[in-house]
Length: 226
Image (cartoon, rainbow, N blue to C red; front, side, top):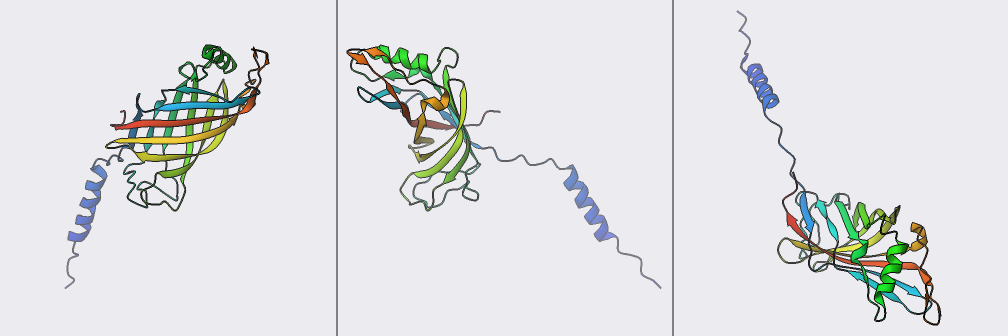
C-alpha cells in the first residue's frame, strides 16, 4: 500500500513564509547626527593686496553632518567604522553668514568690512554655503592622529556655485563632540567677485584674486531630526 504523503514540512514552510510576509519591516539604523555649535568654531578668509596681506574672521558656522550608522572617530584605531570602499557616505551642510566675518585690520577695519560685503553681494546672497558630495579617507591612517579626508562638494558664494575639492580633518573633542578643520583655496573671480581696489591712503590698494578659507568647525552629536 502506498504511504500517504508527509505534509508537515510543506505546511511548516508555508506558515513561515506567511509570518515573514506579515511581519513589519525593520527600520534602517538612523545616521549619526552632528549639529553645529556656537562655541569653539572659527572661520577665516585670508588674502593679499598691493599694500599688505589681510585677514577677516568669524565665530560662527551653522549646519549639520550626518554620518553612516556606527561611525565612530576613535583616534586609537587605525580603521574607521562606517567606511565603505574608502568613502564615508556623509551628508554635510555648512553655512557662514557673510556679515559675521569681520576684518582683523588694525586701522579702519570697518572699511574692509564694507568692501568685502559689497564685493560678495551680501545683501542679495547673505550666506556662504557648502554641501559635501564625497569624503574619501586618506590611507593609511595612523592611530593617534585625526582622520584626514579628501572632500569634494559644491560651494556657493555671491550667487555662484562651483565644484571644489580640499582636505579636511576630523577629530573627537571629548564626549559626543567633533572638530572638522580644513583649508579651501579659491579665486574670487571664479565666483564673479571683482577683487576690491579701494583708493586708500596714498594710493590705490588692489586685492589679489587668490584667497583661502580656513575653518575649525565644532559639532555636537544629537538625535537625528525626524
